[in-house]
Image (cartoon, rainbow, N blue to C red; front, top):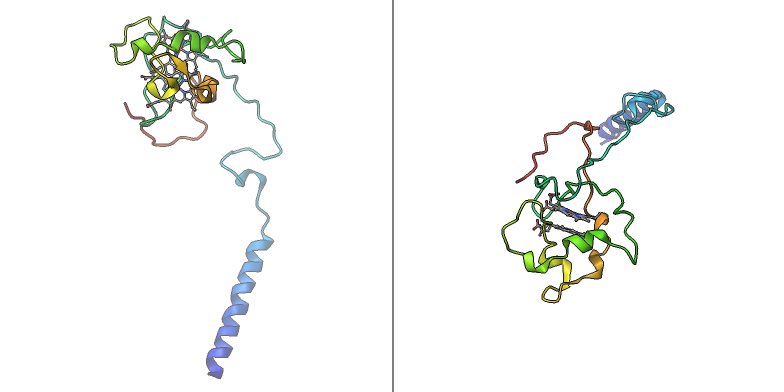
Length: 154
Ligand code: HEC
Ligand code: HEC
C-alpha cells in the first residue's frame, strides 16, 4: 500500500514537472495557426474578382458542393445587390414557377425551386427566401486558402 502511494506520488510529480516544462516553452507567433506568417503581420490579401459574365450568357451551372447545397451564382451580381425591401432583381428573373420541371434552356433563368415559394401556383415567394444572397454566392477564381481533398458532387 505504502509502496503504491509513494510510487503514484512520484509519478504525479514527474507528470506535473513535464507539464511545467511544456508550459515554459513559448509558442512562436507563426506556429499558432495554419498561416505561415506571424499573427502580428498584416499580409496583403489577394483582391477577389468575381466573374463578370452577364446573366443569361453563361449557360453553365456550377457543380454543387454537396446535395442540397445552395448553388453558386454563375453570372455577375453587379447592380443587382444589395437586395432591398423594394428591389429584388434576382426575384424578377428567377421566380418562374411555370418553368419548374421544364428542361433548362440556355439563356433562360433557372427557376427558383418549389421550396422557395409560399404558394407555387401563384408564384408567391416565401419571404424567408427574399434575401437570395444570404445563401447564394457569386463565384471568383481564387487560390484555396487551405488545400483539402473535398470532392464536390454533381
Ligand atoms: C437578368 C436575369 C437574371 C437576374 C437579374 C439574376 N439571374 Fe441568376 N440566372 C439567370 C440565368 C439566365 C441563369 C442561368 C445561367 C446563365 O446563363 O447565366 C442564372 C443562374 C443562376 C443560378 C444558378 C442556378 C443553378 O441551378 O445552378 C443562381 C443560384 C442564380 N442565378 C442566382 C441569382 C441571384 C441570387 C440573383 C440576384 C443577385 C440573380 N440570380 C439574378 C438570370 C438572372
Ligand atoms: C435560406 C437559403 C436560401 C435563400 C434565402 C434562397 N435560396 Fe435558392 N436555394 C437554396 C438551396 C439550399 C437550394 C438547393 C435546393 C435543393 O437542392 O433542393 C436553392 C436552389 C436555388 C436555385 C436552383 C434551382 C435548381 O433547380 O437547380 C435557384 C435558381 C435559386 N435557388 C434561386 C434563388 C433566388 C432567386 C433566391 C431569392 C429570391 C433564393 N434562391 C433564395 C437556398 C436558398
